[in-house]
Length: 184
Image (cartoon, rainbow, N blue to C red; front, side, top):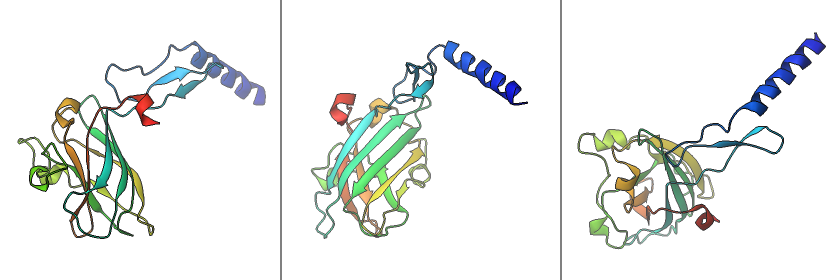
């Protein structure tokens, strides 16, 4: 029985070794695989389509000093995978909001705008699951999926806003294109 399992394992390894590099996609943001020197398939690092460096919201006067970054990858159907790594948040902020907004600046709070969603969609439904939860030190790391009805190009240049538990806007960053060498 052990010999039979070893033979099956060897056959599977040969199939993997003979596969062409898998999952090469034409749209950025999708996970790619390539062969290692041993012939095993390994996942290559994903470069975000868009990235925002977060800083304090322009007219926020509270004690929190939020920093960190947001990375956004787009699927073929324009669904966004939003990943965040933030600190300086309110401690234990559960289900606090994080949204892309309709403006094109973080410098003027009057121009940041509301939630950014296609007019064909209900913006409250689109952003209903866009939340983070911070730990007791005010740090949050995680991901969520959302589709606001816009492509990568249409989200480019828009602000991402982080809200505190009372919905106060506490941080902002502009979605920009970044290259792998810029992400170090």
